[in-house]
Image 1 (tube, rainbow, N blue to C red):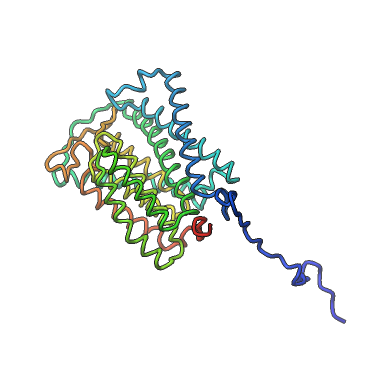
Image 2: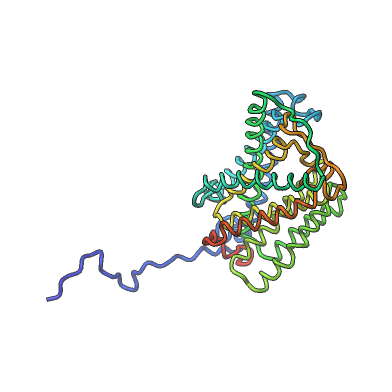
Length: 378
């Protein structure tokens, strides 16, 4: 006599088998707003930008009312107080905007490239690599005679006080800028982009610079946009898996360079370097599974440059820096008023940084990326 199987081992009939539900297909006016993954990516980005501008304006007014407009608007020096207030306002504005869009999309804020394994370890690794990268750049400049060191400007408790204050300021910078570009925008554009939309977006960015004729180092944006064209087109023609991630990286990196053209002391090398390091940070997301390495590297890079070595950053020298330096020789190599980021040597450092990422994390399974795009499906 055959032993009766337990209920848990019984196979369901074919008509009762569990089937993966197909995503809803929206048509008509609703289809213009909703896709397979909820609210279409373009609308999410538009809402995020509008909310960010609203919160930036509101929080800036609140900060001016609390601390006084005179202290925040002064351009005499780049002080840690001004930096902390400004970066906290920016980070909070992006966080509030992202949280509201996440609520609309029925996601969590951490879903925007903030989950993943070993987040704290990746953050610490980013801190170490960021400091090491700037140290290598400054060392190369000193070896070539393109930067000269002056006396130490701080002593005693001031060293630790300013180090902590600038650490807070640049941690906020890392959280704010990476939270907006490599977290929300990279994640959202990835789920909704294809090559033609990426090309159109990058084209609009370049056209804006061309028609408005303003900004510093705008040729750096053009170079970044041009360098991304051929690889993204090749991925599109090959119908490569995960190509939408790299198309999104092309958009966000070009945009990252674009927003830096508003800085007063930039040259085209510094702008291109900003776009290039934006791409490196996108690669780190692909390899580590989150933006935490990028956040740590970004914060440590700015801290090392502005506080520890006391170099100019986009033409601005921070108040309360530890070491003191001054550029010397050919501007192409020294970076001139822009600082080390405006030197041709920064491009070599970025290549080494990218190579280090690939060597350290490239053997591991890449982080999953969205494989279908709403724009293509819609």
